[in-house]
Amino acid sequence: MCNFAPINPFRYTKVMKKIWSALIWLSITTGLVLTSIAVFHLNFEYPQNPMVVQELQQVSIGANNQDEGQIQGIQSNIELEDGRAEIVANFLTQHNSPLTPHDYYGQVLVEIADRYDLDFRFLPAIMMEESNLCKNIPEGSYNCLGFGIHSRSTLGFDSYEAGFERAASELHANYVKQGRIKVSEIARKYTASVEKWTNSVNQWMAEMKYDDRRLGLEKKDDASVLEYARTEQP
Image (cartoon, rainbow, N blue to C red; front, side, top):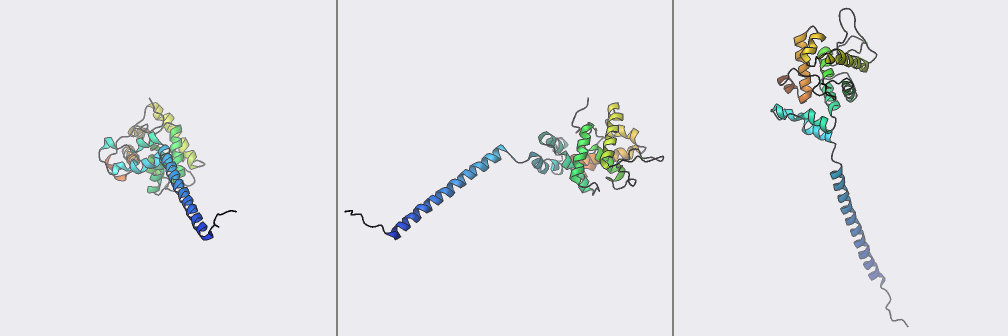
């Protein structure tokens, strides 16, 4: 005959509740610990996009640091991850260019500059001088760079992209390859308004360099159109 006392159902329920509570607490705690380890691993192995970090911390450094030798915004972006298209897009946005979407045309202008070994700031700077970033162009011409526009005729293109491509090709073949690499040297052949064109293009290139309009005015110099070219020229 068995002498075991019958199980008290209320006591059993309380014991089981304590056991389940302990198991649930243990599961939650373990999950939190594992999640924390995984997040730490991901942040360590895969840091934030360096281009974004550099855009926030480096490109705008000119506004906080007056030592020109320490202003490295664009160079840092190129070394870490290409932020040039965003710089051009910001320039288009700040000056209300009709070239929209700005992100798209920023990328297009950088890709064309790379194909012809030009500083990525050069074409946008010419566009700013010649047409206020495509605001003032002959109707239907898609010609924002003043290229082939004179009293006898106006060179037109099927698209903005085609106009950028043709101008970059000509600038590379008939200017840079002939040894004209400074803005002032190119101006003497490109335009009749040499001094005005040189000052203006240099200003806009400096503005993009420092991502700051005031510094663009203060620190402009006679820029090389190869300074931030993807492929260095001899």
